[in-house]
Image (tube, rainbow over all chains, first blue to last red; front, side, top):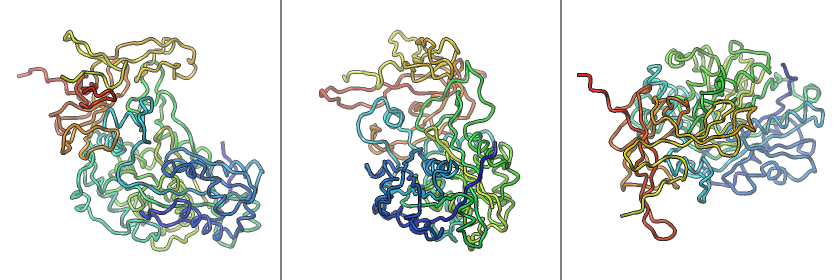
Length: 398
Length: 155
């Protein structure tokens, strides 16, 4: 079921960091850069979609309108999307649908966040019917708890070692040094990772991504509009956006739940939720894992990057450690993963992150990624974490 | 003596006659699937929205799906039980009969080095924390926890 492509006319980002300023400022900076990159005047944009932040009060819940107001009201229709880590992809999908249905030629998508310090925690108040509150109150289960449950299975089932996990961080930190938008532009070694404090066994502090402030924006357009307006460089296209939900019974524990569906009663789906996220993207694009030249995947933890190698079909289950050990996923390797430096170098700015992945792949496919360029990249895939029933994968081509 | 009270009502039994405690779930009678925490609104098995849901006690044993620990004190609304924080383990166990993976804290004294994916675990009811409620009553909150099944004497 191939879907018509839309064009990535422009991309822009505000550097990630812990700036402590209003998220709107990062979003506007990213939007301004994306519009400039696209050569599009804001007044010519026909639709705006915002990816919501839930940590910045009401303006964050109506992010689309917040950014539209900040850029100057022009009377265009708006949407705001929230889907945890997949929020940016959901906003991107809303923009794509507008364009493919012929309701507009050009759309702007923006996501930005300002994050608090430390563990992400639930909203305030005693909410005994909210699993996100209950997991902290009943179990003391933080986000790293879940990342560690997945990591531990790699250790016990596949023989993964702390050194394997550290190699992911080492690779991503090397990539991120060449990225002006990354928050942590410093190479770290295996010893640095192993010397960092344990947070949730087997994961250490440097195995787990931080939370960051940041902003990213994308200008999408119809292919017709792009042919008329784009510059001379390669035209990057969105070939697929997957925002699928799990299929019952979902037998892999997923944040913020503390129990899975039951595998007794109804047949368990052949593909896990995370596998299904990638499957849907490949099907939409009419492409497969063998076609991929570069990937940006959600390394909330080092071990989760390895899970994605398998879930996206880059290798069989239990073989991901081999890919990182062999250097296959480093820049210059067979299939570079996270050339941007990934979450290891950015820290997560939830509503901006899925868009930042697409920004990076756009630069990679244009051949303008500088010292972190993946030579000859023509097909890129993103993946982000399926949590709270959300996840996404975007495929871009040129 | 603080009053002993389950941290959540209707999610687990607290027998006083020495029989083992159990989680309380519901079962979709049409599809045969189970839910924990007990689903009381409607069956979440697709196509069985109108199925009756019956309350059942779940298996109190299962296989360890995965595990970790909390080396740092979790943020509010977690209630600290020691000062300073002492790491505790968290396990995810697949219940034998219902094949639901249920997370829970592991009883004190068990570390990650004592655990292995696939090992048999059993449910216990234990103290979560002791705190003072809105009426000024000191309450010992009860919660389900996991512990490794004592190895059968083989030697």
